[in-house]
Image: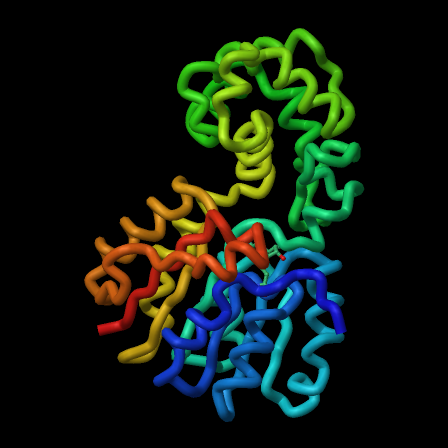
Length: 292
Ligand SMILES: C[S@@+](CC[C@H](N)C(=O)[O-])C[C@H]1O[C@@H](n2cnc3c(N)ncnc32)[C@H](O)[C@@H]1O
């Protein structure tokens, strides 16, 4: 069956989990690709999977129903920020492995209604969790020019053009859809600048808004601040990130934790073969640490 979302660096995840058994936490279960890989390849493993997106939860539930029946897969609708509380409620005192696969799933990216993609027109939404109130529309239309400038400066790393993009947005409000926004960003950037960029000129602005809507960096910092305590001795945490802001947080939090030994001195990258067959994997960086 075609499950739409191909898990990124699944072989590498299994490699770093290969000497472990017992309970694993999949913080970002998505379409369940990584969870399935763990359950199918690590004998007797149990996975507790978290996600906040109802579409993802539905898909993962279907895909992993056999494991669920066997009592090897538990699905929880919750932000990974609350993993500690959920494990406590389940009576789990420590786990062998923790996996985070950050970023968007193909399911989210290819549904124009979710408003994550500038390549298709859709409402400015970008919520991973559709129970939450704040949407991309609110950020784009109601944040002050200074808030937007700061957002693009910090999270889009638009060091030079943050102010110009923010000012163009404020001048053209209200902005209703993803393509309206992309066009305004295009107008804010000089032609010469657009030509020199490797990625689409709106990628980073969309990324910044998504980070703000979903509180992504604070969630990551918050979870990583206590995640090492959840691991048993020798247990491992594997994080796959997709941009430098996330990767920096992962790197620093692994290095500064007294409970962790860094396993991957440099981030592990997908093979050329994987990058060719799954372009989404191109920006992936994986870091692994082990509980001392
Ligand atoms: C890249 S996808 C994961 C794909 C998955 N590894 C697979 O193999 O199918 C990331 C997932 O993380 C979820 N997510 C984002 N923020 C979250 C949070 N704070 N807590 C739990 N899940 C979150 C998204 O809804 C999305 O489904």
